[in-house]
Image (cartoon, rainbow, N blue to C red):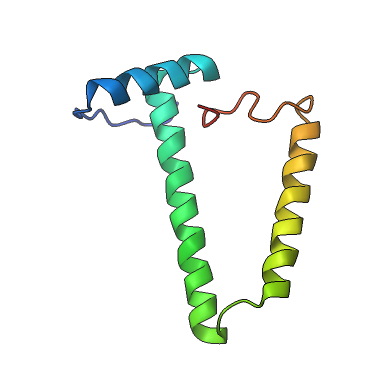
Length: 96
């Protein structure tokens, strides 16, 4: 089993309720939902930093490069959705 650290955090009651509801919808625990969501946020930030680094070295992406990237991402999401019965967000903790 993975080692875990316990933390005590303070949240606004409304946010606490939203997290609890999202975890329930995802069929997971409050802690697991928070952990997965934090991991996703860190991956997003790392990706944005990588994009900024590339643009800093090579200049901004062209309109064509951005269009190609959007098309690739939409295709990837469509393929992922088909693997889950076509329901977007099914089984995902971030589908809140």
